[in-house]
Length: 184
Image 1 (tube, rainbow, N blue to C red):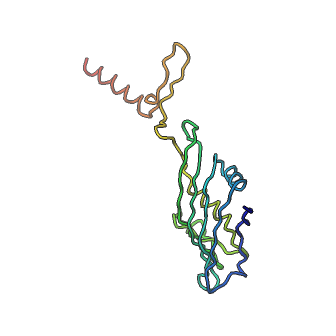
Image 2 (tube, one colour):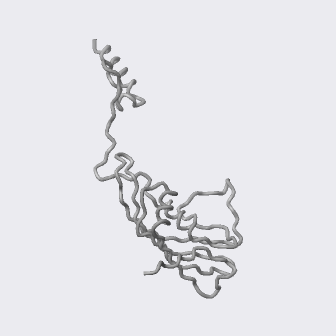
Image 3 (tube, one colour):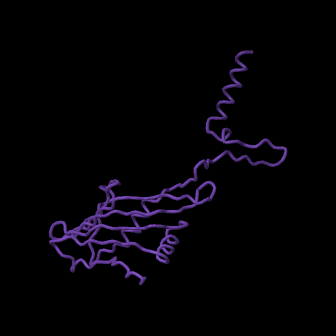
């Protein structure tokens, strides 16, 4: 079976048709998946697929709308064992010809911050990498992995526990001592 031709990932805005949507499907395999996994600092990527369409929105703006699907293998934050997660996420990115970046005073962080300045090209591989990064689990854990209390000390010395490090633990001890003095 002949190797399939790599999918087009960069589109020149000047060549995009105004009156019809351009469909795309990106399905990286083999070395491309390994390179992307290394770039993202994860163990493995499988079944990566990014598909959708690019269409005009008005006279000069463009909308990329699609679906990202991938199986991700990351290291558990507790045990370092592999954790497999399936990600299926909608992708919507608006490219504006007259994009005005908000000033620091008027900027508000929202989940719907999907507008970008329009350049000469629309690079779907950049969108894929960014969306994949944003959808990765931050603290993947294997089932049953739990952060237990670790206690370290030199022999003969009472170890400090998490309970002892609480900011008001000392005050509770002082309160108890004062209460005992008042009872006498």
